Image 1 (spheres, rainbow, N blue to C red):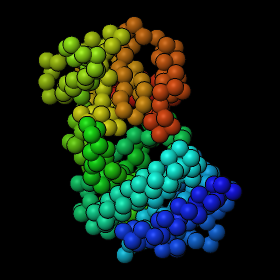
Image 2: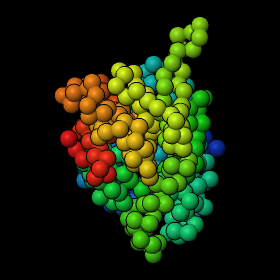
Image 3: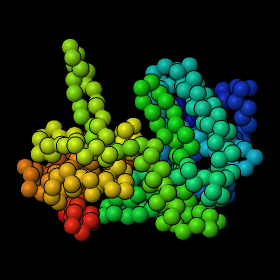
Image 4: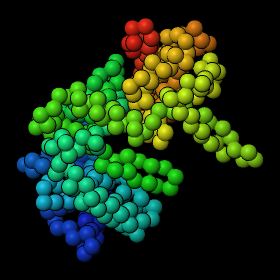
Length: 338
């Protein structure tokens, strides 16, 4: 009962905020185990969330949620708040601790949606959006339901997925790329070969986020870790000792979805040149990939154990990319699951 009273008070506060301009129709509370009923737009949104976060084809609410609808001329944007998290914050800091967070998220997503509205309206025009296409790596097994709606290339238990970049956000020293998955229904009117769009997206991603090796060092006179990036594709004089325990992983210059660097044109061939032999790839997450020559010091069993520990203890669900070890054959130019 206390939680329900909290939700009622929160909704009243949001409705009274003139800057938000929300109506009762824009705010929906759903308890765990319920559905959106006859509201088709919300039902589709809930199905999409369940597919994306839980890999389920279901319209049943997994946990109590407050959904704010932000209507625009063409479509609706949804803002989701887990009631359990808000209530814990409420018990700690009261409504004065909850309201600023909720209002900030609503206003931020509203402004972002307005900013990207022009691009969203062009989703069906390939020439208009082709420079915004990028590729993101996802785990196929955990995302199978949502990937059924998208365009992707499967490699083992990984999927290289076609997205549209909506720009960047900067928080402190970190950057995030805002993007949305290209739904197959959007691409039906492109009148372009799917492979052509995919290749364009991979080239865009490589240009925006070049492949690098990332060396981790400690700054002089400080315990703070620092990263040093080395571009290696154009400079054949660059060498790496991949048999060292602290050999640098392959990533991208912004270290965002850095594992995609392994699939850029020419990168695996360049790594084969650098190692001088076939090599294993260990995708420790979506952020990077470790390279180990076949004749090197690392056994496959050790790689499996390390990867399993990483996925269990260090990676959030959306950061996990693979549970497999991969082998690149330089003669065949093929990457396969070991």
